[in-house]
Amino acid sequence: MSKRRANSTALATFEYGRSPKSIISAQGSQTPGKQSSIITTMLSYKKERERAEEEALMLRNRIQMLMLENQRTHQKINETRRQTKEFIEIKLISQRHSMLLQEVIVVCSVPLYN
Image (cartoon, rainbow, N blue to C red; front, side):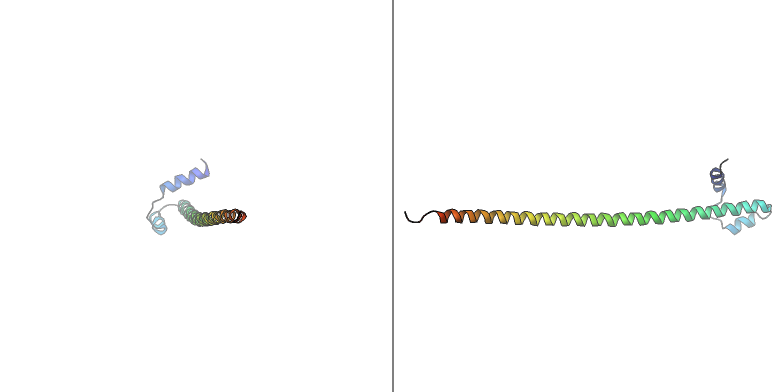
């Protein structure tokens, strides 16, 4: 049996909700080898729990970073939209100005007196 499978079998027999001391004292009549296997099992549970907590923290941090990145991206999108709107307005004003200037040139080029 593989080590991983042996650990999962040992984990399945662990009684949740009981303190390690109560488990050891309840198992007190067993041989010292059996107690060491219980302690080993409890230590493996502790390591597994710590690993799970560490992974949860890393995932929480990753989610937070992604949310910040998303927020920054939306800010950039909104800024780009605002700049595009300003550019279009300036372009329209420039076109109107050009048209008015051309009209003035046409009017000024026509002789007033024949």
